[in-house]
Length: 314
Length: 246
Image (cartoon, rainbow over all chains, first blue to last red; front, top):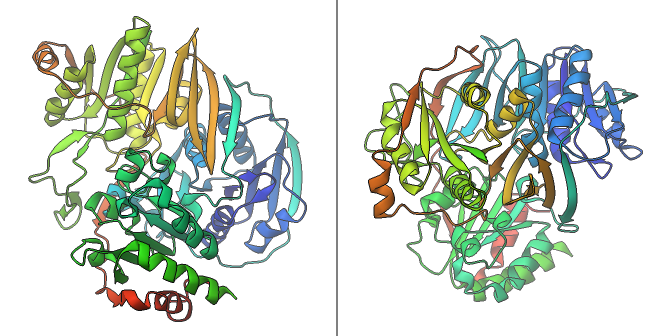
C-alpha cells in the first residue's frame, strides 16, 4: 500500500501535496492513504480524492510541530495501515519529518526525486544532485521506501476516487522542543513551491530599487529571489538566495534581472523550465543558459515588462 | 559541553561537474575538495559555543584517506580533534548510521550538520540522526544560542522563520546566516598538524540504496534574444507562445 504525508498548511493542502498524491497514485500498488496532522478545512479532503487518495487519516492531539513527535506519530499510522512506500513533498517540514519516518519504518529513502520511479527491475528513482549540475539514478534496496519529491517536478494527473476520512488520537509521544515564535511572510508564495520566480542581482544597484522587482513578481503571481552577493550584502533576506549554496528551485519560469550567471547561481536554477535573462552585458554567461534574453539596463527594461504584464492581465 | 560537527568533503563550488566510467562515477580528476560550506558554518558556530561554555569540538567525517587534508583544515580552523570513519560515504542513510554509532559510543550534548551537502543534496542526515538517536532535531537553522542548558534556534520554515527552544542533547543543521565562517590562521595550521585524527572502521549496516548512474543536465537550445526597446514583447511570447504565464 502507498501512503503520502498530507502536510496541512493552516487547514489547506498545497499544490505540492497534491503532486505527492498524484505521484503516489501513479506508482499505484493498491490503496492510497494520506496522513495529516490536525483537521483540514472543509472540502480539502476532496482535493486529495481528485488525485486518487482513498483514505485520509487525521491525527488529533498534537499541539505543535516537533520533528521527533511528528516522525513517530506519522510513522505509527503508516505502519498500522500496512503502508510500504511513502511519498512526501520535499518541503522544509518534510525535510524534518521524512528521514525520521524512514528510520522508524526501516525504509530506503531518496529526496529531491523528480520523476516517477522505474520499477521494471527494482525501484529506481531519478534525483537531483550536485546542486542542479547533475542527476543520479538510485535504486532503493529495502522493501520499504520513502520518496521526497521536488515541488513542480512531476505532473498533476487527475485520478478521481471517493475518499474516506478517519480521525485518530495521537499516541502521545513527547517532544523536547518548544516553539516560541513564528513569523510568516503574509500572503507570499514560498520560493521552493513557486511556479514563477522573479530574481534579481547586483545589477539592481541597491535594496531601495527592489520595488520594481516586487511589482513585476506581484503582477505575474511570482515569488521573488536573489543572487548570492545580494543576500551577502544584506540587500535581501538569505531565504531568497538561490544557487549552489542557497536554495535550488525548479519553477516553470525563472526571470533573472541583473544577474551575471556564475556557475554557482546557475546550479540552483538551471532545472527551471523556461529561463529569461536580462543583463546589460551581452557577454553575461546567463545568456548561454537562458531560453530568452534581453540585453539592456534593468532600469529601462523592467518598467516596460511591468506595463506589458499589466496590459496582458487585463 | 561536548559538540560533534558532522563534515562532508565536497567538490569546490566552482567545479564543472562531469561523470566517468560510463556515467557511473563522479569524475574527481583535477577537482579541488573543500569542507561542505554549510558544515563550515556549523563548525564555526560549534567553536563559538564551545569557547563561551568551556566545551570541546570534535569533527567527524565518513570518508577515505583522501579526506584527511580537508579534515586537517577543520582542525586548523579550531576543532579539538577529529574522527574519520574509514568508508566510502555510500548514501545519507549509511553516513547517518555511522555517525550515530560514534555518538552512542562517545556521548555528545550537541551534534551539528549542514542543512545539506552541496554534492548529493540529500538534506537528510540531521533528521536521520535525530531518529537513530531518538533525539530532538531542528533543521535549517540560521541562529543558535546556548543558554542555561537549552539552545534557542531560529529555523527556516516554508514561507517564514520560527524560533524553537530545545533541551539537550539535540541535533541541528546549519543554514546560511548562522555565522561568518572562520578562516584558519597560521597558528591554527601549525597546531592542526599534531591534533588527534582518529581513524575508525565502519559499523556493519544494511544497504539502503545504490547509485547506479549519473546524467548531466540537457544542453540548452540557443537563446532567443529580444530587443530591449521592445522588452514588452517578452510578456507576449511568454503568454502566447511559451504559454508559461496566464
